[in-house]
Image (tube, rainbow, N blue to C red; front, top):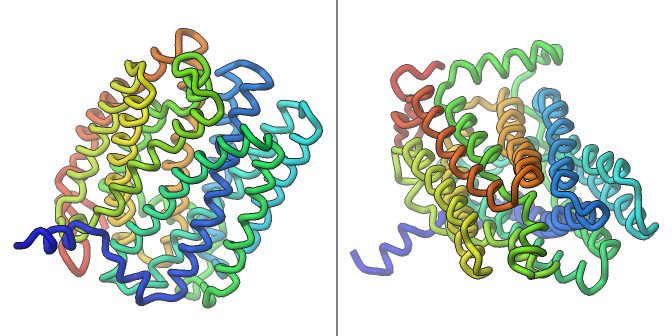
Length: 424
């Protein structure tokens, strides 16, 4: 096999972009709007730390977001499975733009009340709990089954690209133009997402049965309970994100350890995304792998080890490199977890299960912000990072023992094959 052939086998499958115009539009719109969204992700903790000087207050942003996201996620799935998903996305994009607009007005006022910032990021998190699962649930209806793994990899690669560009741009905008401009850039970029959603074909969910909301939630959770490979993936990712997510202490580290200012803060937020993009673009081998569960376990172990090493870093470039390694590992894990779930779950339950997945992968880091901020306030930022990395590996080991179906999971081309003991 030639070097070129090996590279082609390694590279992500881009067939979905070539063959599906709606998918291409959706990804492009998401790319632009999420860059703006990630600018706000940097601006909010920077603003809170500037107002309070407290890592715990920065962690409080994560607590508010986690509570609102978890509360909204349970109802988000049934909504996605009952209504035209295109209409849902239109409402969520407009709502998120309004939240960023109000944050801009608060920043223009000078020193907005901390409770007002918390309230707006909480509302945005609740809206995102509907937007994210709905967007992901649309993808399998836009691409053929054989292109699904590649489409999900591309979706993750595009999102991770925004995690690089958004924070880096955000740091520059905050340093040069101030916080109000950062929030207003976010508002402007939502136009791209709105155009992409308007041009989507109708996305009414499959099936004609419309359950009562509580019954719909129960059926989705009951299906999840019968899928230990999905539950195990959730548990492993939660351990990594709740304990091993150090981003709440980035503002502290940028100021006190690395002396890098707002631009350095943007690079700290961007570094995991940079590693994740490179990893996502080399996921072609995952579409041919039958051992996706083992990739998840190994990837999360690498995440924890990289976070521990980051806690000991004193050179800025070394810190960025370690964060990039962690981001790459997280990207491989995310592609595998998403592919497993989207191939196992039927369309009429996809919105509900995707909502639970979204609650884990987004709510986990929010809780991680609180944990990291609280430990940093009680001890130091470095202790927060190192102890979190260690606990994430301990949590991974516990989840692996509790859910052996993840390590045992096997898939085959043309469809998933549940591991022994995995329910249907």
